[in-house]
Length: 244
Image 1 (cartoon, rainbow, N blue to C red):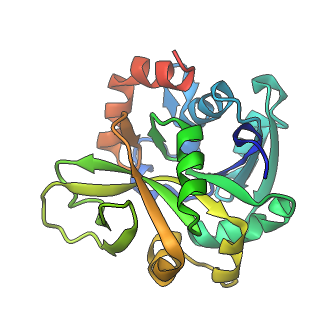
Image 2 (tube, rainbow, N blue to C red):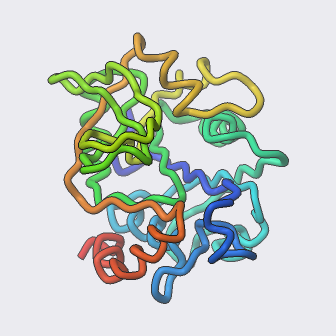
């Protein structure tokens, strides 16, 4: 088994970002600026600061901009490969398309390109290996789960189920969009547009999905309000990204 630092990270950066279009009309959501850097640069630097240097970006909407900005990754001391979808495939479909980049790995890290979690990636990989499940996810406690939906977890960390966004508020655990998957996950993803959250995870509960609760800063920039909050948190985000 490879060392934890050798793990490949897959970044899901192909979404349309329709809710953010009013403040980001001509760029893909991961290239939204936070201070002087793009949001995606913060994710790349976070991975690099923790020793993860092989990245695969699943691009789609306005993919040329992302590929022109990051190129082969050498400016960030990483290597970047691209898996570009020609039509929207959803989070699982985009991952399935990237399978050819992951033929030689037993496990890999996956991150949403529009959310940032202050996390120790090595801890999550170690947790995944100890539990020996098919998938592990980072979850965070929030005071109001209404916008996200919740993850139901037993005392051992095993995921029991998911509750869709219900419009009702209340505290709970939410999916933070950072995962470790065994390569066998591809056996459970059909071809075409598929969602990890809606289509894949509910069907593989019996194969073992585990959740590791995190207490670090979490933010996604899916709405103008949260994008504005990211600007306020800019210094903290940069500190977390650079491992300071």
